[in-house]
Length: 614
Image (tube, rainbow, N blue to C red):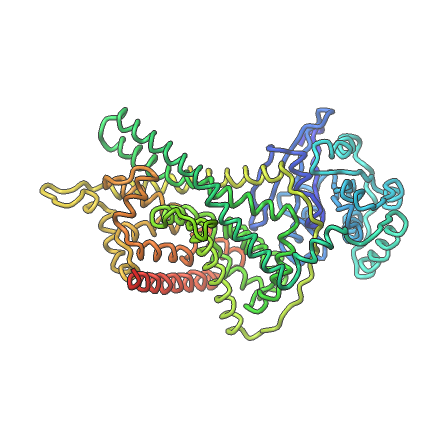
């Protein structure tokens, strides 16, 4: 790295606004990956300071202490101490602290200072601190700490000017390194008390509005009712807002397919473009708005400070089924994708609780299932109102999510009964102040998740869609064949072979063969069905596919397939993460085996009961 660049590490406790500060500084100039050899997110960005110097920012995992109890905290400590392979010691450490909760955050600031690295303390959320009447003597705090202290408001565009000006200047002198032993760690609490007494004046420990909201949000009865209503309305909104946009995209790909048919001569290339790309891949693209609407609400709930309260509220319920309140946020993350949810279990310090959470996380309805649900619900569930208010399709979607949650609770309860150690662990966690979600952070979060989906779409899903097109097209029907050509293809033979296994669930051969690529990526099941029916002469776009399914599936079969995907064995990537996080092939086998058994039994019962009723 040249002399005109500066490598800066952002560190701080969780919920200090560190990521918002990182987003404000770097904007879209970010690169997200994992640290070598571990599934811990590594986020790096850059920006150019007024002097022309390029500043490289490394957003390290949130950490409460260097007494590391999780892989996240271990990596933050190792990077700052220069012990992590491939990561250079940063030139400067920006320690971000929540100005409304300095008593908790100052202890970590003192730990960082003891490393002997140049440090700048960023007092974030200063606007919120002033509204609460909190007065901080910044000059005195800087003098006593021996490091520069600047005020920031990460959610405002001009709220980081002072920080940029400070890091763009001369690197502050590094404080002397101090020994890390039990005696010195115990002394940190006394130092925090002295600093607070000398530099901070607080009219009350918590904000008045937080106390008023928590009176209802954390109530053992009303709080659960509020949480249920919030999640119910989220799923209603997912369908109400996402479905029209999905239909518009589906119509667009149908239009492109029709024009491609007119422009291109008949043959394998036309079939690949129209049936494989527009029919298969285009159908999956159409469900991106539904996924982004769900992500939007999750990000808003996260940014507002409500999610930690939901974890606290659900702790007693989750302990009763063998989990812990700490499991809530990893499990909620699994609604986006099980992989970050499983990675998020690193915050659970108890190995037993962590393993239980890892094994049930794939039962949460990830975004990859949404295209399958949206397709089948659109084809089989009428768009009518229930009680004149609720959308029936939204109710079915909510029910599918509830099935996954109830299944996870049942599996957790069984694991609790089977294990020897049935002790319970108290939940201790910080509840951040309520705040309005920042538009910029939500937008960046949506952009990141949308790009992850599109990269997956143009990588794994595109490859599998082309493979499914090939299997559905070749070999061609023999001379004198009386059935559809696709019946004589590789897909036809494979599907009829699998149908022997899945016929009791009501699956035809097209449904059966779509389960193979779904093991690599669940949403590929939609592309597989679209390709198979398009090659077979039915449903070249989203609307046509829905009509083809309604003509070839019974309602009982559709419900059975939805339930299958609610419990089905997870994708290969999830299995790989379970192997990496637990370092055990046995746990991978347990996860795959129990999910397959639960999915098969649940789908069988659904099909048989639905067939009897209909």
